Image (cartoon, rainbow, N blue to C red; front, side, top):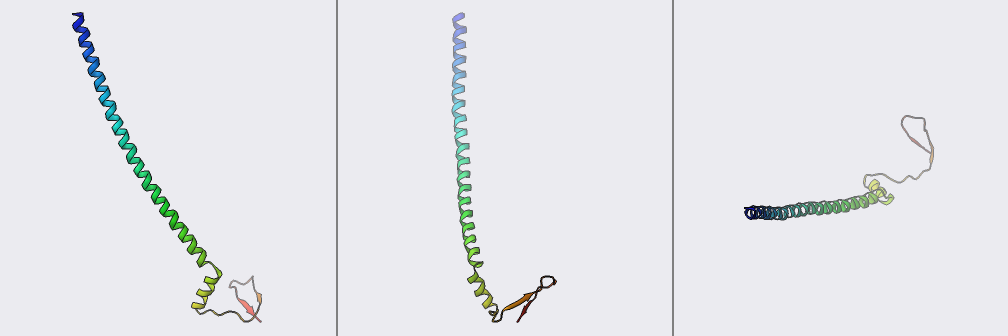
Length: 103
C-alpha cells in the first residue's frame, strides 16, 4: 500500500516536472519571438533615423548654398535687381518705413 502511494506520488511528480519542462520550453520560444520582433522594429527605427539624418544633412547643405552671398546675388540679378552705383548717404532709423537716401 505504501509502495503504491509512493509510486503514485513519483508518477505525479514526474508528470508535473514534464509539464514544467515543456512549459518552460514554450515560454522560452515565446520570449525569443518577442525579442526577435522587437529587434526587427529597432532595426527599422534605426534605418529610419539614418534616412532622416541624411535628409537633414542634405537640407543643411541646401540651406548653406541658398544663404550664401553668391547665391543671393545670382537670384537678385534674376529678379531684376541691379548693383548700386552710388553710395548710401543716410538711413532714417526712426521712420516707420525704412528708406535709404542716395547721394
